Length: 106
Image 1: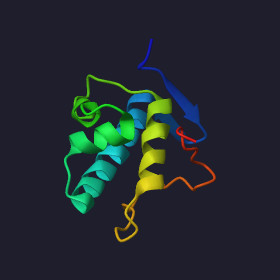
Image 2 (image 1 turned 45 degrees about the vertical axis):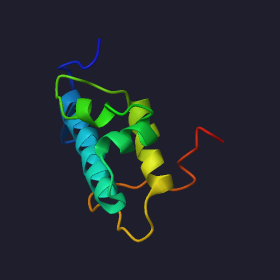
Image 3 (image 1 turned 90 degrees about the vertical axis):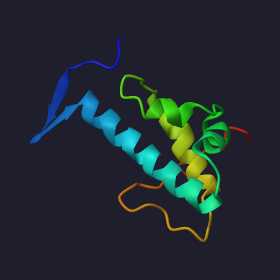
Image 4 (image 1 turned 30 degrees about the vertical axis):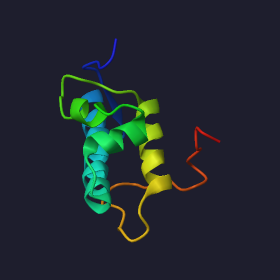
């Protein structure tokens, strides 16, 4: 059952499920805020387009709710494919390359 409270040690670093999930959640929240501002639309509109669910980003704000790594990849890939060219990609967020992102509609 996920998320778990288990942790893994890799070298000097201790990775926890919560810290990874929080990092992914933060990345999506930063992207939706920047994209919605650039396109002058709501997070609900972006959720409908990026995740197929207008409530996706509302639920993302609830730490009791979770999402899968597959959903993260789908949504961050959508952002990468559809990012407005005149808007800089958010600092600190790794942007998938076109080779990394496969359009599910293709």
